[in-house]
Image (cartoon, rainbow, N blue to C red):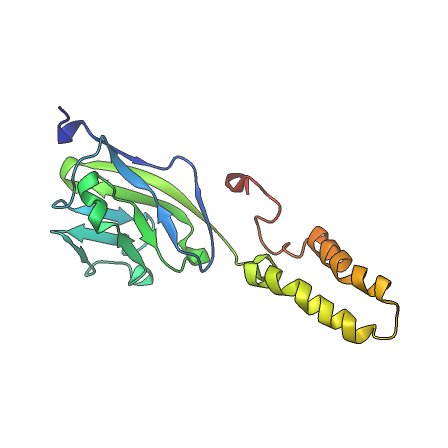
Length: 184
């Protein structure tokens, strides 16, 4: 039998990485799982005034002392509180959101922290750009090189696309070309 006092609050030990504008989940869980639906759960960011990012008390979110920068941008998975999941969802991440977040289970004086890294949005890295670039290049070359041989024209869009990708159109993005975001 597992008693609530034997649970441990665990957040991710790895930094969480997001791009500006994305929604992100800051994972935090009681292990073994214990219901916290009737308890007070706090998410804070030390160094901010007020430091409260999200306060869940008596079964609902309290916004009285919440930092104004986080109003209507945070949520807990309320249906998962009974399973000990106190992860925080942060909507529309901004570069200023980067930093250490601490989850506190007030009744048991437990806390755990997670680091959030926020990179700038990369226009050239976006899926929409990558989807429409080949089509746009094809039409550009079709109209620009109308009088030349088709064999030369048909190779230009894919070659230019490959060159631009290799050249690093994403260089404004701090994570371009990195597979391990935690070392950025």
